[in-house]
Image (cartoon, rainbow, N blue to C red):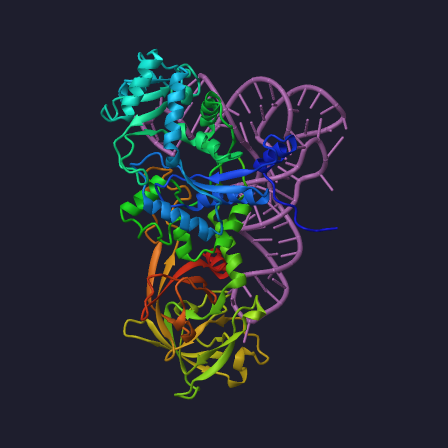
Length: 556
RNA sequence: UCCGGCGUCGUCUAAAGGCAGGACAAGGGACUUUGAAUCCCUGAAUCAUGGUUCGAAUCCAUGCGCCGGAACCA
């Protein structure tokens, strides 16, 4: 018997299974990922991408990429390019690359067809009038005074709209449905508006553009999409899409809605992310603190970890906010298995091994990854003058302190057991140097009889290379930014800390942009694109779990 | 108050009338040349009230709560 893990299931896959049993789509499964190219993709889109592409792959179907580009004022080729790059990076390949704008002519013909059927009319109501005629959530709307124009008049007017005979905003084409409907989307919704805007693909060919609601369902239909998977806010639009499809008599996909992803300490709306970028509150769409795919990529997240995350959060209709620690757990998991261990001292404190010969440099052997024997070993130089992490020394150590303190013994990873003999301070009383002794018999870190609980990372002073290291924390201080007012006010002033003069073991000299490492005892770090030949820059992907920090916090 | 949707450990998510399970988080322990990783253990939930049933998270009823919906945005 096979013991393969059961394939994960969710309510969407159950619906598809049911369709396959009943033969509704002849066993066919075709999905699509339909972004509007008006911003960069974020981790919430990654969830949708994993669902859309994952389902198609699982059922042996296809998944298209379609840009829903129906609002030229907000869309841009830059976004199209970034969307494609991010999807590929995540590890997915679409079957066809499509654009709603490719269907403009067909959509226009369908609009004329609805006019001819008496199911659409040209309305001259202004924006304000139209709004007041729409009614409210509680009260029904009123029919437009233009609702009963003849088919011939509507057709003529609509053609003249296309021909550019009327000013922007002066007229709309509306579907004739039901102004009393509880679902506001059905209150004679706008199908076309006049808008003289340059479109990134169709240029100035059109001065009328279809509304998203008049494009989305038909686009899916044209493409033969069987399962049109989208987020919850489009649930109220499904009856409208179905109305258009039925009125037109064309293939009807099944729309299925799921809850979008929210993450603690994160904002996810495109509007807010755009504001962070435009107002210079972050360094760009790919700022490593951003939840954008490109931000996560620059930060050092792997595609595998993001896909794993998407799998672990599941798919449901319940509104939910996932703990960002789950995402962090996924990248730790992945990098723990794959990242090469190196030693890097972020805040250096000088250590002199007084009984170690001056001018000598010896090479010590260090394993590259205890999780992966195949990763091999490397040599790390050791000498009399070293740097250790400043926070690894306490003059007055608290209880449970395993690290260095006056008179204390500690192991230098892969090297020797040392003892702190004397503390050197400057005029202001700041500790500037530790004078230590070492036990030559402990080479490699082998404790001789004594129990040494603390093990520190270190680098030899003369061979160390310098680097800049950027430490990141959550971009926001509140779990739900903006909950108590403006989300900008919840920005974390400590979300970026830049350290310079960090000391790295010399093997890191040739690290390439995008390379990821575990800095022993500190976390995972990724070489930032700001790196140039004489200036290394690292981003902290995520810290290691820090049990000591928790103990100390509890001690108060 | 109209339309639609949703309520399961702190969080996310399973359980299709039959032992409320998993993951993250939390707490404890073992191990440790990373206070990492790994391993073991513990605590922790069915919105409420009725009903149907031998048996209800699941079916029914009534409440309550939360989310979305009134761009010529998507």
